[in-house]
Image (cartoon, rainbow, N blue to C red; front, side, top):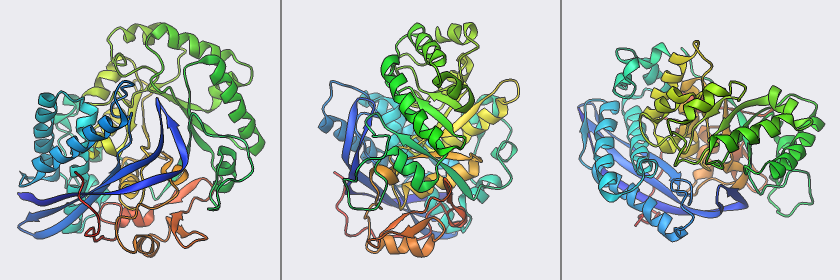
Length: 465
């Protein structure tokens, strides 16, 4: 057994260099929550950390709530999880997480908050606990997962996997590089344009593709076929100029409330000159086309049965509960997404489910971004995705924010020293992602306890209240 004590939640403000338009809002700044906790067992004591931006209008896509109300709810769920984690014991990391999740879910139901939002708090405590456990045992996360040392009980989340371990479904060795799937937001300029900023980083999609050698994209759409065709044609022109093949995902941004509207939208895209043939070759999947209020409606099963020509569809914002992806796949979806804010062990179990069902049908799990930043959130995401065996990952924090969250003194220097394969020094001396030929090297991330090798002194940060 081990127990967790001395849970702290601190905060540092972060601001974008380029506004990020997603869903129904535009992000220009956000609080960056940082969790620190102590894990004690018979083997000793260790500290672990985690972090996450708190972006409005993603966990709750409510057009009627204010940004202040959204932030207050995010803070509530994080502090609730911190209180639940304080003094909590577990027989294994997975067992500890299950206990915490049960407490947080009970609190969330009483508070009337949606599960996706409630899970944000659980995931922050979970990641900090995993970091502490890996540091205490000196076992990197991927190694521990493949050795079944984390105590993962897949059957507790997906009964059809009962009696099996993650090592049955996941690769025998974690990936040491990942392709970056660059986000093109709803308001992002695509073609090259005169520079506005003086930081040396890309400012348009075409600039990023050229600077980083990218060949994977995530394209956000609006559900308006006329506007989406114009946007896709602009992106296709950029892609064709590179003379190399691309793979893309399309984010449906919860635009549709009926299967008929979605099917018509897709049929019109597929028939659009140039765009249809491009999507036939390059499209990986369409993410969350339906609004979360009806994305798991049982009537959608008829759409999947009646329209086998549809591309693979996956859920993201609808993945609020442990059984969400299973319910989605039972309807006809091909799978879902991994996001650190939804939880590590849930992501592991979902990856195993997707892989277990592959064969009878085509299934997929993709790795998506919530503007994750170094030093903690980004590297912990990379560690998990490596262990799951995914080959590409959506990333946008380095583009829209372009900085390391300043959670401690010398944070940039510590990253450059500890992760020289992943970071390079910018023209102004900061640490920035080193993306070469569209990929990041993550060998030092895989070898670290849980993604991030250095430890940080958070004493200078104010408490999150």
